[in-house]
Amino acid sequence: MSSSSLVLEDDVAVGALALESGETIPHVVQRVTRYGVAPNADGSNVVLVSHALTGSSRVLEWWEGLLGPGTLFDPAEWCIVGINALGGCYGSTGPTTLAGDGRHWGPRFPVVTVGDMVAAQRRALAALGITRLGVVIGGSLGGFQALQWARAHSDAVAHAVVVGSYDHLRAQGIAQNGAAREAIRLDPAFRDGWYDEPPVAGLKLARAIATLTYKSEALFEHRFANRPDRKGGDPARRLDDGFDIDGYLSHQGDRFAARIDANSYRILTRAMDLFDLRGRERPAGATRLTFVGIEGDQLYPPGHVWACAARWAEAGWDAGYRHLHSDHGHDAFLAEPERLAALLRGGLGHGRVPSWPRSA
Image (spheres, rainbow, N blue to C red):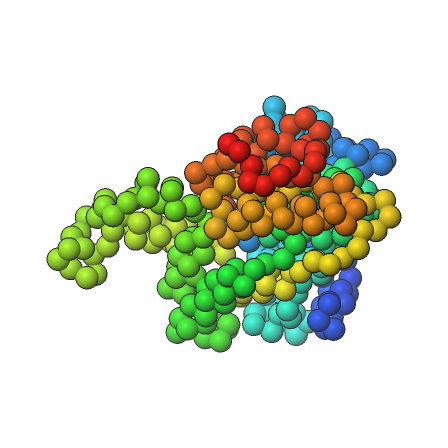
């Protein structure tokens, strides 16, 4: 569905927000985009779509195949809501917005958590008259938000779908995020976060570091192997000439640097680092949970997603697991949304946690 099909886009002021760090952001705005039908009084037809690291509130622009006419979440039947995460750079309060002194927040923007993001989202939805949700769904960082919604507001969410993520970030993911942030910090153009022009070299390197786990080894081998760059050059003769995979990473880096704010990237990846919902008891009236593990996912291996589903089921949650077969690895939830939609059809993934390993 094109952006012309959006129903309404709002900048919703939610007031001062006390953060889990102890700091307070005095004036918080949430960019909210809504598509489809009006919400039911009980919210049963509302689906909140939480975005991943570089997403926006315009969810039909980046998750076609899962959302849109004739898909799992058809706007003729659903009220589809997207909210730009606190700390992001697509309309919600973050490093690119103005602070009280009239300057951009920049590197002064405080550390935020996934819990802070969800708290701001809940206030924004309440201001729009939406207090209950039929479904919350998201992948990667969006999956963290979906699970946070289930844990913090189980009385307000019927079903949370957690795709390609689980209840904490492993040390490998924290290390990857730290290396990516350091690549940005070391770019002279970063200027300690007070840049006028984006630190493109640092952003490109950060994206390359991340992409090594966003795609599967099998996909890289099939697409690129050890072939020289299709745009030319001879890596056997010149060190500065690259392979085809180098050209792909450079291209992805260019696209990334053109659409993300460096300070926002640093804020959002730190929120991922801090996320940890292990060891939490089941509240009364708990949300139904569906965890989706992705074949070849190097960032959130499906075995760990399955173990998380089993852990939450053992704690008393109505938790199920689905396995998405794909050659794309972690990015499959974005690269092959139709496969994800097919997997979730029929009760939106309701079911038990199967034994592991799961056969093909």
